[in-house]
Length: 419
Image: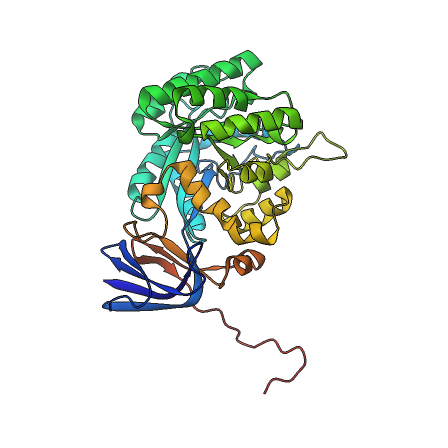
């Protein structure tokens, strides 16, 4: 039995509490708990559930420097064209090596849950095979969900819908689509219908790259929402990006938000990547590339943030630090009132867990696995303001990693009064 003492648990207690863990499961939370054979003093630091990255392309990571990968226009569509050539050179070993490096980078920054979109527009399914192996290999260290994603289109890529179904049979967790990349609106709609059909047939989750464009007439999110609401699977569905919804007029947007509330569909925003990719054809005013995060959040519609890319043909940087993603996202969405700052960690923690449908194994609650982070902060506000580092990541009650207490070798002394 193990006891973590003097923890300030996010969203639960202003005062410090103890967390009692037995066999990797939280058995008690409170004060004056029974003694344990190992007691760890967290010194009043903020304890939060693990970071969740609900949208990441692990088969693309670290390919930005590959031959032919340079995206001169910085647009989504050129990125897809560059990847078409780059992926032909990847091997199973290469795909595994890069994905493992990307996972390690994210986990080292506090991520314990990842949903990754793996391109299945590949007759060899190289990326998928690599990720299925890694998911099993790392299942005790990080929870990974795999989206069968047709990067070049479910129908624009010949046989793309068949590749998706094959990926689902092999073990992918979610059905993906990219309707705005299909060659005509009607074909994009067909891909949404097929996505929902496959999800129902194979009892899978849904995560669609939806309306990742500045075109305000791209409204596939409307059809997706209607179909999953009809099937009663809105809570098992996520719409990623929805950039065009950020450009839609209010009459349309607020009508749709009422329908989103009814369906229970989740939204995933990718603040850094879409701020970089979108608005490339705009002069000024120049769009931010972000969906209506503030309005969705205020409307009780579940919305979360993700990294999306790490050093690939779409995005040259990225390092899996979700505190950086949060910082960018709340600036772009203008969600920085004191009340919002006190709860915006939800955007990279609990909201992502809801999107992944992993609530049964997520959260600092009695009966749940002892998964949590210790931040170098004593309040949510300070954690967000300072972009607090993760001092420790705990999984099943054991450390995934623990960093030393922050210290100076030579302390800062502005007034020269140190003794």
